[in-house]
Length: 389
Ligand SMILES: Cc1ncc(COP(=O)(O)O)c(C=O)c1O
Image 1 (spheres, helix red, strand yellow):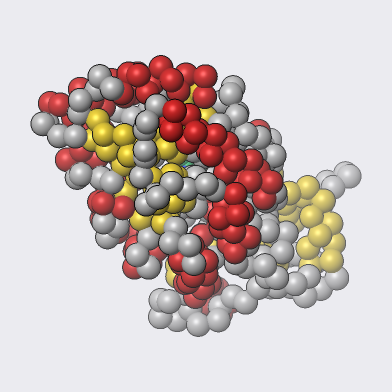
Image 2 (spheres, rainbow, N blue to C red):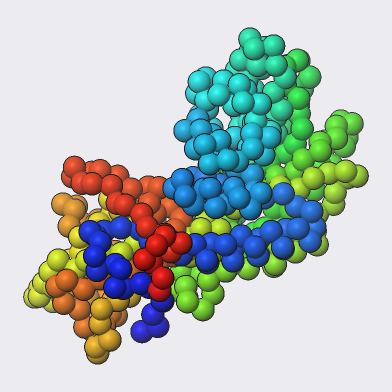
């Protein structure tokens, strides 16, 4: 088994389960994304939904990135962490009035509007404050992201965005809404996308949308492609930093920009997944009739991705170098779905061993719940005292 490098001695003194973040890796990832997007002058807004841990957010804000928010709570978290309001974009099919007002009060950069009904309310709320809200239309491009159905967002049948067939009507509507300023078009087709052809198809589709705008004499300054770049969950030690160069180049090759247009992205997972691990202790090794179970003190309350998206995480036993054996790795929650992996190869495992779930920095801690009245997991960081690997 290939192992990551962890401060095992320090871990032994801590109560499990907990999240551990490798801040050096986070910084390397941020440096790469800045360098690769910077080649073309592209703007990057971190999708806070992937990880809203205040320490992680402040590191990311420190690199000058913007923030992509999908709730009022995320707007607050972004502002608290030091993301400037004029780099905050706000998406979501169901923005509540107070959330829109929070965005208006803070003069955020842009509302990514997802329906005609939302535009009417945005206009009404902006008018009540005597403001003009900057708006990008989130287009549903009907492009298949070739990813898990539960994280596909850009197909006609998904709830997100404005269908292409309805765009003309929405553009007509906008001419009447005097407290909105159309500044851009936006799209986000899904998550954990590793097939660059999906992004190429998106770039081509957005070119077509631009042609439609041209025919109406409309020029938008900003084009936003959302997030979605996937990571390698199977090889966290070999490929810790995702393929940002290929990703941005795919858009660069195909995009037909109009003079002065700015291009934006909203990566979440690709920035933070690999720097985070969930560390859990083995409570019992249970011999079943046909299976051997490793029962942990972490369950889907700490990491829901396997139960919710059938997601795979590479699991390591940090305490054992023994022969590998095959186990079903499960949590303590009273639900059959509380399974992290079936037939997982692990070094021989005993009660008290620490296991690391790798690539858990995105959609991990932020999705933790207190179901079964459990405690929320704590988080520790490699740049804290005592965590030198
Ligand atoms: C609007 C929007 N932007 C960006 C993202 C981030 O996606 P990812 O974490 O796959 O990069 C999401 C995630 O679903 C999203 O809904």
